[in-house]
Every structure is written in C-alpha cells, then in structure tokens.
Length: 74
Image (cartoon, rainbow, N blue to C red; front, top):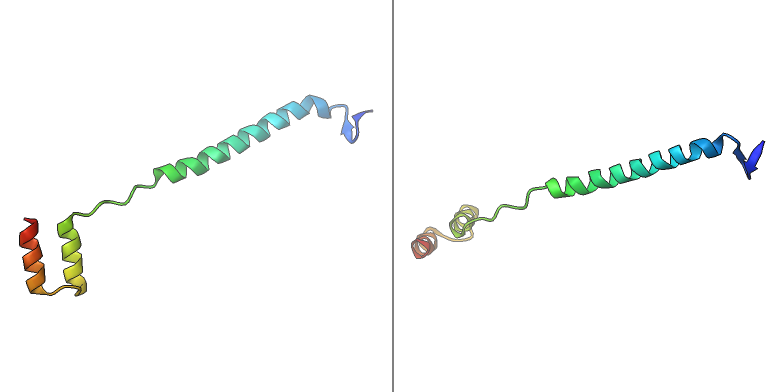
C-alpha cells in the first residue's frame, strides 16, 4: 500500500526518525567546523625588540642601527 507518491506505508513511521537523525548530523557537522575555527590560536604579538632582532638577523639593518634602535627601546 502507498501513502503517497513513492512512499510505502512504513516510510511515514520511520520518516520522522530519519529526518531527526539528518538534522542532528547537520548540526553536528556545523558545530565541528565552527569549533575548529575557534580553536586556532591568534598570532602572538611580537615586541618591538623581537622585531628589531629579526630585522638585524635578516640583514635589513646593520649593527650600528641595531644598537641605536635597541638603546632607544630600552
């Protein structure tokens, strides 16, 4: 027997369970995706001295400029 187009009689009894499980699965997927984005740590802010040391290590500034700027910072 058919209750509707393409649905057997038992389909309506199980239909709400399947729909409920589908909604639960979608909510779970959305929660997982959004919680992964929140768990990422924000980038650490570097101090001015750390940036200065990096610039010196990269060769962007020479020793004299490094020492002058370091004394300005301290």
